[in-house]
Image (cartoon, rainbow, N blue to C red; front, side):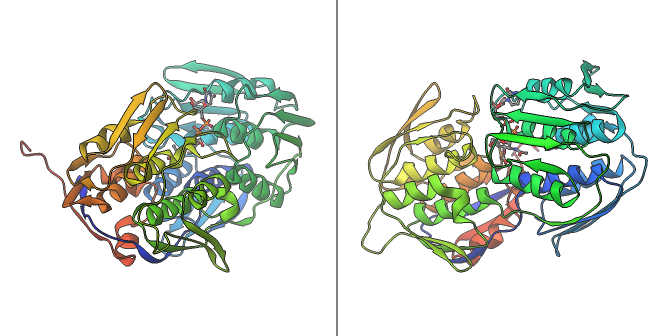
Length: 429
Ligand code: EPU
C-alpha cells in the first residue's frame, strides 16, 4: 500500500535524536562478508528495507543471513561454495547490489550482476567499475542486461587511476583487489568515511590495505580472508539531515551518535550563517540561538568527500528556501538531482534552476501543499519543508524516505513535530 506523510507546519524541532549505522556502508559491508568463508557479524545496522533486500540477494547466492532490525544485527554465514548471480529483480530494487560484483569475481572468478536501470538522480554509469576490474585481469562485458565479469585464473594486482573518485567504483575495486595476486595501487579514489569503514572491516578480516581515506589506496593481495565482527560507521547523511532539520525549523537538536568531523563543510556553513554548532560527549548539537530570527542562506557546491555531500544538497535547498537572503546551490555530482526544486516551488519557494545551478531567494514562510518525493533525500527534505510551511503538507512517496531513515516520523514526533503516516490513494483508484 502506498503511503504519505501529513506534516503540520509551524514546528520548532527540539530534543535529541539517535543516528545508527550508515545505509551506504552497511549494504557494502554485507557484500564484503562474501569474501570470507564462515560467520561474519555486523552491528549498528539500520532498520531499513534495503538491508532486507541485500539479505535476500545474499541468500540467493547460497548464504545464510539472519537480520534482527530491532537489535541492529546481521549475521552472515558464507559457505565454501557460493553462487555468482544477482538477479535484475533485486538489483532494480536496490542499486547498491552492484557492490557484490567485486567480491563475487574475486571469490568465485565469476559474477553476473544485472545492470541497474537509470534512477531519479541521473544516469550513474558503471564504466569505472568495469574498467577497474578489467585492469585486475577480469574480462567484463554486458549480455542480456547483465554485467558479466570472469576471471577463471584469479585476479592480479594492477595500477589503476580513476577518472573520477566514484564511491561505488572505489569500493568494488578495493573489494576485488584484496584477494588479487600482488600489489594494487588505486589512484584518485573516493575518500568517504564509508570507504574507510569498508577498509577497516577488510583489514580485520586479514586484508592488507594502506591509505584508505586518502586519494591513493595500496592493497597487497592475500590468499584468503577470515570472517569478522564489525560495527557500522554512523550515518553522516542522516546526522546531516538532523543538523539541517534543526537549522531550518530554528530548533535545537542533539544528534546522538553523529560524528561532526564527517560533516566538516556542512556544519561549518551552518555555523557561519548564524547557527550554534557544538560537539557534545555523545555527538553534536545544532541550534538556532534565540536572538536569531532567520539564519542566513549560504552557497553550496557539492563535491566528493570531504566536500559538501550531494546527499545533503536537497536539505540545503529547503534551508535556503526559508533562510535570509539569496544564494546559489550547485550540483556537481549528479545531473538530474534538482527535482526537489519543483516540489519546493509548489510550497511557494522562490528558486530558479539554470543548468546545474539553482538560485535561491529565501521567503519568510512556505505554504503547505501536496508534494511528491523522488528519492530518499528529496523526500526527507520535503518533510522538513512541510514543517516550515503554513497549514499542512502531504508528502507522497514515503517508501523512498523509508529506505534511508528508519521510522522517520517517530523520530520527528519525538522532537515535537506533528506528522502522521496515512494511506495515499489517487481518486481514480
Ligand atoms: N559515475 C560514472 N561511472 C562510474 C561510476 C560513477 O560515470 O563507473 C558517475 C555517476 O554517474 C555519478 C557520479 O559518478 O554522476 C558519482 O557516482 P558514485 O559512483 O560516486 O556514486 P554511487 O556509488 O553510485 C554513492 C551513494 C549515493 C551518493 C553517491 C555520492 C550508495 C549506495 N550510494 O553512490 O547515495 O549520492 O555515492 O556520494 O553508496 C543516497 O544515499 O541517497 C545516495 C544516492
